[in-house]
Length: 442
View 1 (cartoon, rainbow, N blue to C red):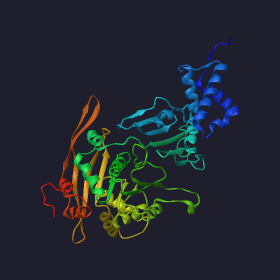
View 2 (cartoon, rainbow, N blue to C red):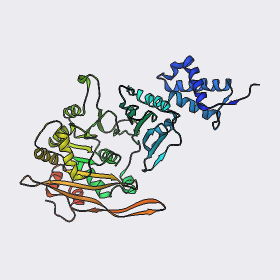
View 3 (tube, helix red, strand yellow):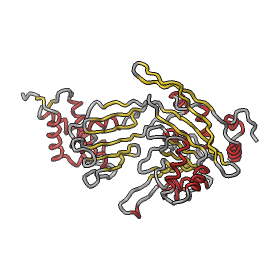
View 4 (cartoon, helix red, strand yellow):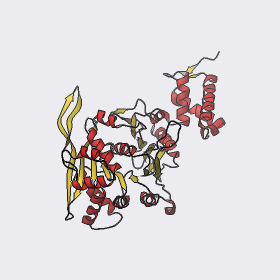
């Protein structure tokens, strides 16, 4: 009777890969994923049993599963890609992988790649799903695994050879956050959330601003999810879809009115569909609301044009404060037309009267730090008024963990001009009174 023998995992993987590639390679590329998975695992099991192979630390079942993920999926990354409590996987090098969880924690992964070449092989497999090739001619590539996972990869030549590849994998959390979730986590007060949802519902355009991972897209998605089902929403995203705002009833019928659109890159400029092009298209399909997922370039000019044409527009941008947001918009708009900065400033402040600035603090909590309104005075001058603000009172270290204390404060009521616009757009006075304190509503 042949005895089982312990072999290094890398050696077992090499032998099994050779066997499968020589005899059953078609299964790895088959579109019938579930059927192929069953067959591949059966062939892997038979090979292991025939040669009496064992790997220290693995049961037979665990070894088969791991070999399958290495060959047909994405190595140990597979276990993270399908979870709903992870926001980002950052691969600094083949042996340094950090996982960012939805609660803000950042932890090293339990495993890492065996070598720089192993890391490159797996990342190439990930990028292959979107038709992207990572090599010496294209050492920086942005692709996606699905409409929920965005991948930015940087290969050797840009990073050190012994690193292998550096990658940021952004995972859109499928969990639908509610108003209660935001309040419970301390992201905002109930009144602030009600103001954002109702102001946008009744026609005010909003820019959600902050740094990467500050929570701006999540908050915007929540606001958009509260729009009435009979209102037509057109969303525009760059390459990868993060929004899923389609609502279905118990029978599976779609009950709201949403179009999700993404840009398309092509080596042929005539085949490329930019965010600016999609914004032009959006205006022809009779939308009530337009969402530009993120303003990074000249689409900012078209976004402010759309907002000034009477559509409710929501968007995000990278900026360090509410006031800095408008100057960032001006900079982006100038990429399209080299207009006078004062003119552009007047345009963007008219287009987006409400700006919400959010931030991820040092203790990994996310907060809406400020909501402002831009008031246009009769002489055409602008005044930025703070409506709501998060005030930090103390930073304490408890058991080696930083804890930031603070509270939300209402600073000013919305202006008479905004009150008038909201009333004209149908907001009931009972709702409007929530945001004007004891003021009379004209």
